[in-house]
Amino acid sequence: MSYNSFLNKPENALRRATELNDIAQPQAALSLLHEILSSRRHKTWSPTYEKIILFYLDLCLDLGRAREAKDGLHQYRNLSQSQAPGSLEGVIRHLIEKAEKKCRDAKEAAEKGESIVKTPGSSEEKQGEQEADEDDIDLFDGNPQSILLSTMSTD
Image 1 (cartoon, helix red, strand yellow):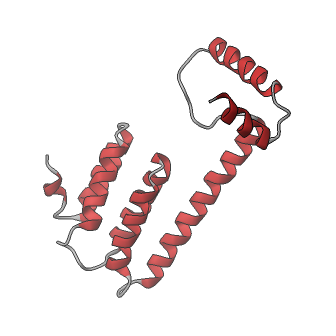
Image 2: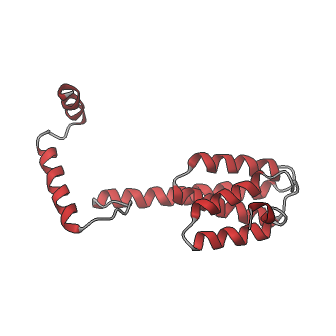
Image 3: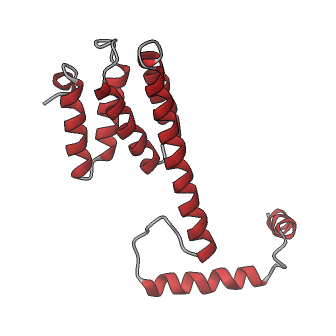
């Protein structure tokens, strides 16, 4: 089924995007929702569009797509600013809360020395890489300027 069949009703597009995300195709879900938000077919705001933009922004945060999130917010602003300005405020608050939570999680992981990005590989390989990284760190006094200078002098 093509995207055009989902442009008739935003509810159908939201349901399909949820299905796509559930089967590990978040990029396809994101492009479908972007097409709905930027479609000129529906110019009147409805509560379904608020659900669409919230899901869209969650996908953008998960995928690390800041530019698409910004574009989606512009499209939603154009759609909702005259009919539901309170909805736009709620969407922006949602985005800020989710982004701050993601930053807190990343900061906590960094303090623990963990990585949020999950990479495939055995734990033995990671152990060897950590030992090599620690050896490289021992060569420097930990000062960022000395690290920069050493990279400049070796090139």
